[in-house]
Image (cartoon, rainbow, N blue to C red):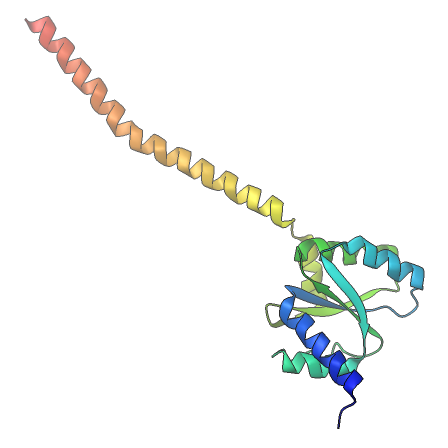
Length: 173
């Protein structure tokens, strides 16, 4: 029979996997408490960062429908559960890992798919959600302006042709 505290920890991890946009697994060996606190603060409201036992994390991931995390769950593991912008948190982790080489990004999970460390680093290279939405809106606005110009072109051509015919008719009279 599982101990109630372990069952509660598994349930909490399972809920975190189900309710987060993504999760990034890291190895924190050698980092001080002060470093971990600074890392947690850098996430703000976008993510929570917690140390978890590998066996409990494996069980919680399986219960959440995530398979394939076993290889990444070796050594001391801490998980960043991302509730906000995934790219922003991935950038924060990447930048922190550059400044503190003891933090190692192992991989993660996004949309139920397991990511390797390289995929997480590629997420960090993405621009923020707001920038991507602004670019999309700009592209859509440009295409709408082109469409409006194309729709107006035949009408203005017809108007010029009618004006020319009217001028020709007046000059013939």
